[in-house]
Image (tube, rainbow, N blue to C red; front, side, top):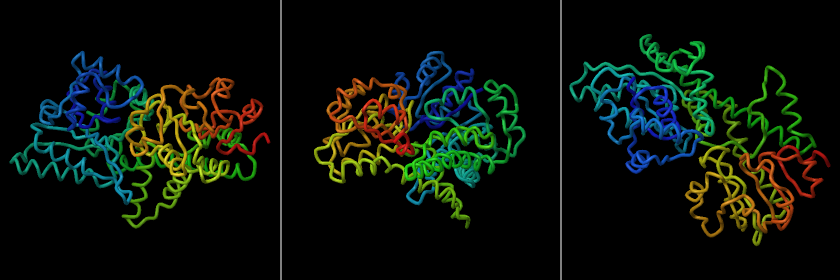
Length: 446
């Protein structure tokens, strides 16, 4: 099948490359000429395990093409996927301007029957507006006879495992009221599903809410565990024991129960805020979602508060080594990352920073460009802790999990660790001679 994929970010590029790997021909369209030139030269705009290999292979074999011209992308397409960003506005609502701009271009250039598929995460009511925009453009061209249908197909890709998530999905949600469109969508996805049971057909509004509900539910689990971790630090419990104790309950399960320095990324923060906004717009207070967001924003300051308690509020002359800058491991994504709050807070109190992340350094330099004099970026994890007053571990990269602790002690001015991802055992660290602070386990082993 011929596919036009508009948007070459995490969702669009992964989806386009994976569809090409399945044998379809895909045109990936993006307005950014520099990004398109780089993709043609096999330079990717993002880091995602396994993605570059797919892009290179399918580009060379002629199934994956890149252009800035929407007309070219649409020329032979049966499906047009919209996978552009919907960043949050100041009031928490999703900025849909990119969606509507794409809809206008589709109306301007489509030349035959087309199934327009919204892959971007959008609030209820958006698809009706997209349909109106396309119809308006067709009318202005005198092409009212051109037929199209529109469907919601929310993505459930996790950064760091996005290619695997696409190729081995736990479910594919298709929102449409048109049976023919549903059947064509099923055919499109059939190569990656073992049975039709993984394809969930539903109405458009339910499909849109499903995406928001899924992300809000996962974010709720994280914020809830972070609140329980705070209680543990007050009364002396161990959040790891509690996680196991509740996770074995089949009604709860063990995923997304890890306490830490807060969640980030492009999905959870944005989608929780949009859910709150949608509720308010319709006269409904989304109290749980609102609390989830507030807990997470507070959680990003937990390590800062621990450091303040240990060193005081004046950090002039203090130097901190940072392990991890991205919002999670296996990505270079800095959007809403806890490191943004933590590093800025430490710098504002006078600290100097030595930072290392396996993939996110270039993105971090952009995010922290106003702090060029206060942050030094280094090429390896041990260099990041040379002569530091403390290590602050923010991202749970695999290489941080079993470091050479004896070598660390030789590098550090003080054997002091603030662990925002609970990578190490508190008792073991105490026995090694480290002063160790973590999330929800600070009373354990005393």
